[in-house]
Length: 228
Length: 287
Image 1 (tube, rainbow over the protein chains, first blue to last red):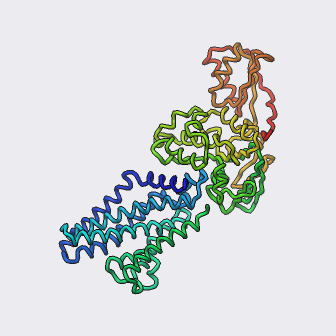
Image 2: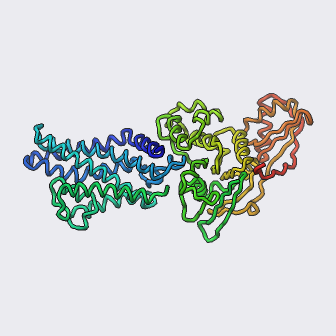
Image 3: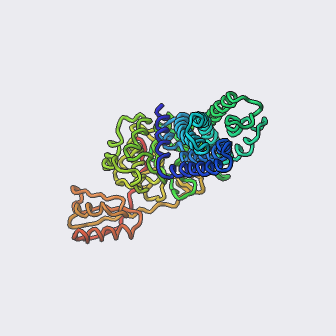
C-alpha cells in the first residue's frame, strides 16, 4: 500500500503545472470552436457531430495520450516508477497507483470536454441537453480511463516507451471499424456507445462492459508484465 | 557477509566478478557502461548484457532487496514534491527507515535543506542529498555509488562512512574516474573498459604524491590545507614529529602548489619540503 500511495503522490505532482493545463485548455477551445461551427451548420445534429468528431474522435484519445506521457515523463512505465522502486517499492503496486491517479484525472478532463461539447453544440441549457451531457460525460470518463490503461500497457514496449504511440495508431486504424478486428480497441466501443455502429452487434450495456473489461485487461497485462 | 556477483559483458569478452564485503573501486566512471552498472546494482534496470546477484538474489525483481540497497547515480533527478523533506518522507516510509530525512541529512550538515524547494537544488546538491540518504541506511545489503567523493559532501566524512559500512561486511561498490580516489579509499581496485570489469592488475599504477613538510606551525598549516581540493590526505603527529606534516595527493605539482598557497595565505613559514615514498594502502574490508 505504501508503494501505491507513494506512486499516487508522484502522479499528482507530475500532473500539476501549466504544461498540463495548456493541453486541457487547447482541447476545450477546440471542442468549443468545432461545436459552435457544427451548430451553425446543422443545429439538429450538432451534438452528435461534435461528439463523434472532435470529442471522442480526437481530443479524448490525444488528451489521454498527452497526460499519460506527462506522468510517465515521455519514457517507459518502469522508468517512471524509479523513485518508488529504488526505495524498495513494488513496481506493480506503484504502477496501479500511478495509472489509477492518471486514469481518474483523464476521466475527469474527458467528462468535462464531453459536457462542454454537448452544451455548446445544443446551445441551450434544458433538461434534454443536461441529460445528454451527463450521459456523454459518463461515457467519456470511462473512455478516458480505458485509454490511460491502454497507453500504460503500450509504455512497457520500446526503449523509450514508444509502444504508447503505436497504441494510439492501432486504436485509430483498427478501432474505426465495427467488425471482429475492432473489438479489442477502446475507440470502437466508445463510438458504439455514443450512437455509432455497434461492434459485432453489441448492445450499449455490452459495449460499456467491454470497455470495463478492456481497461481491466490492459491494466492486468501491464501489472503482469512489470517485474516486482 | 554479503556477496555481490556481476556476470556478463556487452562484448565478446565476458567477465565474472565476485565482490565480498569491503570497498571495491571500479575505476572507469567515464566508461559509457558505468551508469548502467550502477543502475543494475541498485536494481533499477536489467541490462541484457549484465547479470547482478546479491547473495544469489536479483535486485531488479525483489523489492525487499532493493529496500536495503543504497545508491548514487551520476545524474540524480529532482525530488518529486515541493520540498526536499516532502520528497523524502514517503520514500523513507517505503524503506521502513527508523530515522527521519532530517536526521539523515543533518549527519552531513545538510539538515537545513529539508525545507528547501526541490527545484532550487543544483545537480550537485541533488547528488549530495542522494548520497546522504544512501549512507544513512542502517544495515544496507549493498552500497552502489557513482563518484561518491565528488558528490558535494565532505570527503573525509564520506570516506569514514564508507569505511564504517565496509568494516561491517557490506559490499561498497564505488565507480570512480580517479585511481587516486581508489587509493584514498583503501579500496580493492577493478578496471572498467567498454563495459568489461577486470582485476586491477590490468590498470596502470596510481601515483600518490606524498610530501613531508617542515613548517613553523604545522597545526595551522594542516588547517589551511584542509580546504585545498588537490590534497587528499594530511597527517600531523605533534608528539613524535612536532613541526612536521605529511601531505598526500594524486598530482605532485598540484600538491606542492597547494602547500605553498596555503602557507602564503596563512602567513606561515616553511622550512623544507621533501618528496617521500607513499605508504602502501591495504585494501579496506571487514574487520
